[in-house]
Length: 553
Image (cartoon, rainbow, N blue to C red; front, side):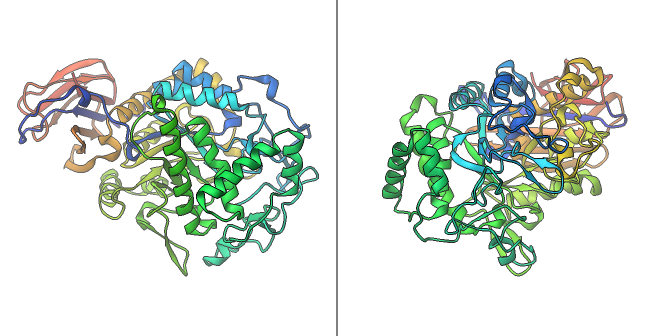
């Protein structure tokens, strides 16, 4: 555990503050509601997390030698389900899992100057209607979603509408009415970020087009060979008739993505390359997703988890919370929230944590979420799959990473291996491959230091999951020295109050909590497993740890 840092979390659910009248607590109020604004989301590369079915490790003759960490490694849907059922995510306080795209990838590989690369990451779609056999089957996905929901865990898939996979000797280019193959994006204006290809040989879907197009011939041939052409066409006919949308490229893809909602009951999408597509596309996608989610709930009333709407979180690369709702292209500002996204990924937190005092980060985030971003949120992270400048690449600060990520207002994204100090620096890799090594299960099983790191993440994560005030509550500093703050959150009849103290010395700890808790209230420290009582407005406890988590006894 990191020396010199003490964190005290005091949590109260449903207890009146000192200056407020006490209220009767309903039975329904005792358990914390799930709210996306406070979610603790685990992000994993499906291929790199856990291999539970070695029989699907090789498909489509993807057997050529690749660059380091640029080929399929065997991770699959069954591997994720296995860890769900083992309680791994529940122990971490995870209440949502986001997986990289699982749709069928290009069959060939491409050389990007990094060595041969297959579509192990999922972002090179060949057929949106099929699950890539390297990841598993449709039955595997159903089992995963059902297993997650049984434990109160939501499931996010990853949506790509902006582009297809690269062209290879096994993968034909899509018709010209579907995609453009030039020019390459320059990223200096709005148009040069949208009406272009992200990189060479990554065909760009003509998302701006409303022109009616036929299915690509390679899909027609594929579906006929698989014996499902008539069924797929009938579904498309129904979709376009019911929706009134033209048979334009983007609407085909939206239909295919919405099927994962109606067929499996997924709870949300993380949407890829948002700023490279016209903003109205995402408003249309919101409409399609809402309709599919409503249909799923109507057809499966026994499987409805809550009344939350379908969740959409967008990747607007380099968006930061300081921008509020408006992302600035230089020549144009675009609001991606209204009518589309619940949340955007926040690329800013790693810099804030490294450069600013804690309360400056917490206070500013809370204020922005309650003003400029009211009714919306951000998804914070400190490491990710394609951010080449993570907060702690060598994993020298795993405790600080957990503390700051999980206590910063907004939703949190735990990248697979954050909790086990999986190194983000791998020798002989090129580019983002260094971020995408296999999950270090051996360290979790056999390394005592890793086990202690994991336990730290588990305790913080469970508190965050149990108490939405941590991520969605109003932040207020109580004292600067020692640094103490509160978070307050109300959701219907549910009330959550959180008090946190940080940077205290080890040993005996006394905190003034008189403005939050009444004398005589008994609190439990889940970190050292001891009870404490509020006396004269203070709580006093002693433990060998520099982290204390207190909750209502």
